Image 1: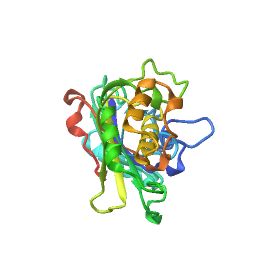
Image 2 (image 1 turned 30 degrees about the horizontal axis):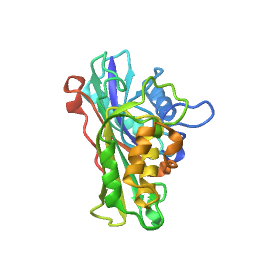
Image 3 (image 1 turned 60 degrees about the horizontal axis):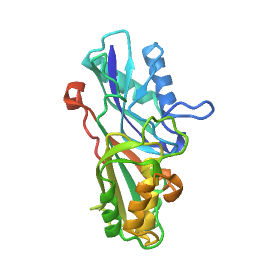
Length: 261
């Protein structure tokens, strides 16, 4: 039997989602606790992988278990596993899916947010990047519109990855000021897939536009140049959040809800 789990975590203390040889990861931490509770070796397959220090409000992962777990047992699993997990990781929900449903390969889109605070805020340490100086978010939004559509995003990809293509289809890319905190700006970006380090590299490059170090034409040339050396320095990991993973209706999308901010 195959099951989905909806997970949220603060990534500050972890070396990313994916298991590492010598560092603690979110995936390994979850697997150990679930293996202990279910008394069966559990192997989680996530919808993607977040880097060290990156957070998730919704990471979807699947696991296989030989027994059929009803709704009450799945609620019980969530309750007991959460009690055993550290405070910075939580299972929000677990449910059964078809056995051929895959958390990574069946996902149709993923959404990230990047948080920037324009003023020093002790309550946003490890939650948002403090961007010093003046930023022109209007021109940053103009530049961000050139990200939309299907393009080769090699300029924003980590080098020497094992991906077969650097083509991604971006459907949303915009900055918005937070209604409750006027010093907080949130960049929301959605795509069918993301390359390693892609969102942080995009944000870092948009910051050069916001500081008028690069023009919008420069930004377009960076995209078209397909060369990581042309883009800006990656923004800090602490401001990045995986916020939503979507699936076709046939793959249980109706059972996956955004946890909200």
